[in-house]
Figure 1 (cartoon, rainbow, N blue to C red):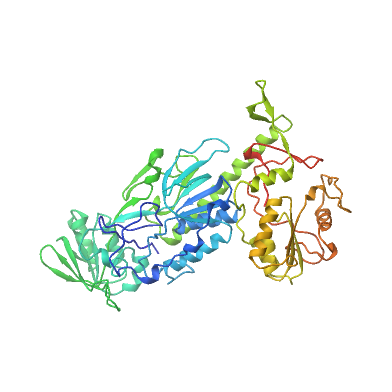
Figure 2 (figure 1 turned 90 degrees about the horizontal axis):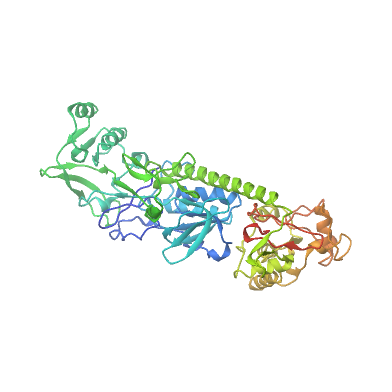
Length: 568
């Protein structure tokens, strides 16, 4: 279906996909069906849980934006969705023409998809974008996004999926019936009003197309043609040949039951009054508004635009990239004709397109890093004699302590989806999580009946993990944690010699087993009991463009932030 618009007081407007501009005025009391008011505000997250810069910021939490975020989340990207929470179709009782969601309330659809997106680690923030800065060109650049509340965000890519506003005719009785007996798309609502007396209030010559389409659902159709301009005799004959009545006098009022009433008659339309004093009995009306895309926050960038019969929209290429590097736009913000499944489809395509752009950039970064391998990396600061000094070497523990010290929380605290799927097929036993971070997976395993142990090189991370276990009411026997540097353990003992470069997964398991009691009964998290090959923590290693240089001393050469090693 095409999402059903809603309106403000003056001018009369409707929201397309969730907008990120100023909140619209509330509609008249009782005009919005209660079933469409649902929204999962509990999914909002603190952006501090994600590293800066993000991989992708998606502005708009409608079908296009959520579909893009879903694809990117499944591609292991760090994604933030900014949602103003005002979907275009919230005044419609039910969605139609959406495969798998036929007859489902729009709010329920968004809530379900939003939960699916969050399941892949994507973060949601309730807010509105104020401005977007000029994207940085070249490898490793970012785009900066400022929210209305003053929050500043950075990402490697931005997807704009903010929808549009339809300015509805200022006809008394029209706005308060929007989504009930005043409709937009016959594919969305035609079946529900089939065989009734239907009217089409023309807004432009395009209404001549709409009235011919509406004729498919009823043989009692009237065109109120004043808004279409001069309709020639040939067109009038064509319409009347199919039984369509044409009334030239302008519409001045819609008549019927008030939308604020109760029962089946609430919002029911009974007739249309025209300027010549005539009243035509009509059960439902179709019309549309002038489209204004929600892209004002990009105005300062001077992006290229496309002028169309339906308005001025951002120009995008075949993969929905705008004329600015790192900015994509998709959904009704660039194409007002898209319905819900079409918006979701192009959103999914755009998410994959953005991921591929990031993949290409990561390979370019890796090539540049490989080319400079062996050469000295210099700090931008002076060493005192006018020449830049070399980057200092930093032990892994020191590096991760610095990383965890950057914010109160690095990871989301939710269980890794792959681990949860694998563990569900196993009987609870003993689990070992290597590189447990802040303990989210260990706590989840313990709650499922496992005796879980987490190991991490960072004392700060382990401290947070222990606090999380205590908050969950778990004792050390259920969820225990140890600080250890696995790179310094030998296969047969806890010696400090480093493993060979070709260290096997079995070696890693045996080495880590020496850090906990009874290693022979330990089961690595997410693996079958036989053979006891460990599964390393299935984390989201999303910074695949970074480079790690590990020496036999177990130390890591410190690199600029964009090249530092990452891990779950």
